[in-house]
Length: 300
Image (cartoon, rainbow, N blue to C red):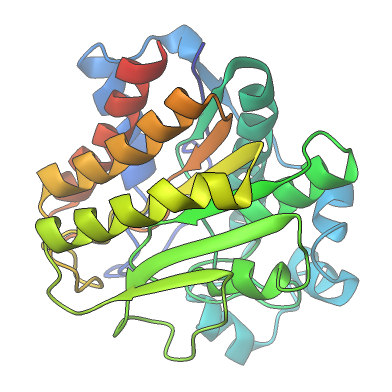
């Protein structure tokens, strides 16, 4: 039983020409509904996540500065968004999408968030279009509540999941795997449990072969009873910020490999979207929609 969480009705106003395609989330939902891949009753609108869960992961000083709109200008420039109460509300809803998707997955095998994947947020700061860290907040809750014993984060965004790597550096119950562009942001990479930096221009064949090798050994080595999948589509050749040159078919096959693995091994997973910045928004939306189409095919 697939449940998809979304928060695209609550979006901050961004300056004209801002490079983050905030409309992509609404367009993903609308496209999946229009083509009949999903029905309205599969969707659930996310409420803002409770502050207690944010405080359980992020520092009180950082959260208070966000809530009170007192983040210093330099710090906001690193985040990349203009400061506003709408941004805070949107971020809390996006985090809750992954939070609720994880709880749903524990019952039914899979939960999905049409947002999230904000893996550049640290405990005490944000950066790279990431204000709060949805995967980390959710994972910490599952661990604290003893709902899971071992978590695997599969991060296939073109950018390293530096926030998650740092947050869980000393947490043995979370294994962070990041497969990313070697020459992409962030310039300074943190140390994940397993980093697989790919050379600029790595196309479908090289990428998929390397991914399959890693996935084949991760499950028996880590023995996860829960997986978070960060499915960023900024790996596309058409992406303005990515350098790995995957085709849309290659990105779709990437998703199929991860989803099929979880299905075969009967490991519950929460899926979140991550980045996607193609010159044509339609290319980004179609690639994100493929993630959902694969999940629907495998888990319905």
